[in-house]
Image (cartoon, rainbow, N blue to C red; front, side, top):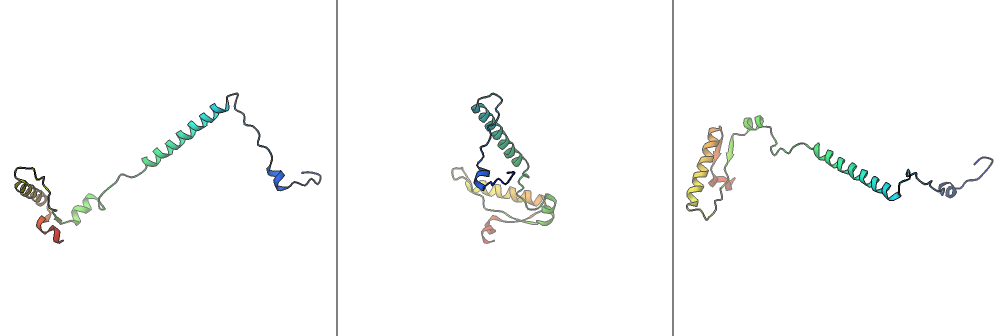
Length: 118
């Protein structure tokens, strides 16, 4: 490049890449080692990405805010397997127990018969 030598774009970038030193190991072993390192790196990224995700919370409110804001709970109709001896009796008993527990917790309830109208 000194003394007025003209270097074109193609000759400047067409230099050969020097051979890599492999410390006397066969190229296949070096490539295999690099592949293992890349796999470990990718697995580490995936694990770290999954580990930082916050746990799923199905409620939009925290527990204290839920109890302070929600006063009425509508009970959905219960589907009971038809092969029970007394499916209507089991259904009525389960609905009454659910309603009683919710009343004990301080909630008002809307019966399952009115659920569909809401």
